[in-house]
Image 1 (spheres, helix red, strand yellow):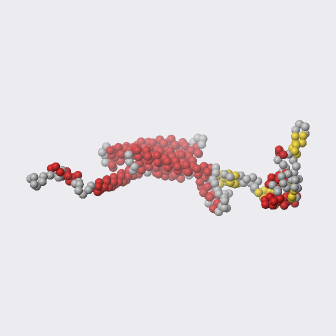
Image 2 (image 1 turned 180 degrees about the horizontal axis):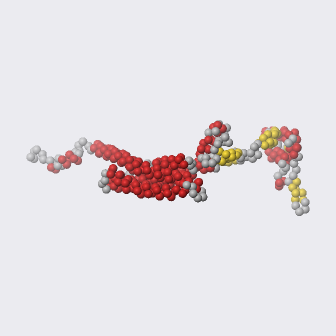
Image 3 (image 1 turned 90 degrees about the horizontal axis):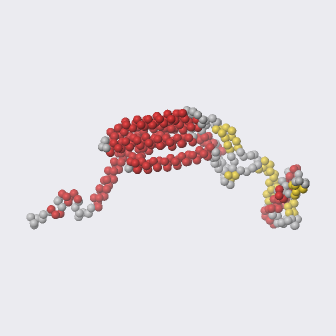
Length: 378
């Protein structure tokens, strides 16, 4: 990670190994000799670090009691031969004498960690770093995962993001859920408003235009996709949906009043363009101080404001072109579905009539059964 140019101050919070004394009991032999795990651990503890505090003898110094800790000298604790000759009691209280420690355990000097950190009952090693300048967290994370060591991790080792990287991953998942739920709710409301399942798609078609404008504004200004930008995109989608609803609703009302479809859409574009443009100008002007990073915390809010301004301008210009075109396409599709469905219904009704029954139009043309005159009566 230190070789990545956009990362600095790489620190590993895992301490280096230090020398330690490892004693591995011979479980089967110790059980046959009657050496319990408790007596074995107590012998080693008393000889190396001393007994536990409550078990220590106390020297009465009058006004206070001084604990007496008995243990081997420092040089003796590093002498393997001395440690191997420690006597381990047999039985509960050592009534059967004792055996050397080397008989019931293997003793060796090795290296081990100073401390062991665990997370979710698994050993954890943390590596932290800082970003250089205005580097993007997503770019740095991608470069880290592209390192050769990350592609060939040992068996049983896994990498989990934490800190800002974990927050970014959670935010991405939460934003996808919020966008999906929001689109479903908007579509349901529009279906109830227009009474059709096709025309709401015309309004939802304007949402990708706003997201494209927001991303384009960030690319032009060199800003990164941060947490405020996600919030700004959610707000932007609501404003863009409102502008499209104004345009489509006016056209639908004009069609219901008897105007032709093309004439109604052109009239809606001419009359609704002014309030849509006014809304865009007012919103962009209100976001301009934040976009210029004025005031405390301006650098944090600037990407959000730039994304909103870019998305509003881009969607406003293209919505007046693409939304009417999409409206006519959806109207044509709806007409085709209606005619096809009506034809299926009529064909199904014709097949239900039996051959002996005259069709309704034939009965009417013959004047009905009561108007027929037989040749004999004539």
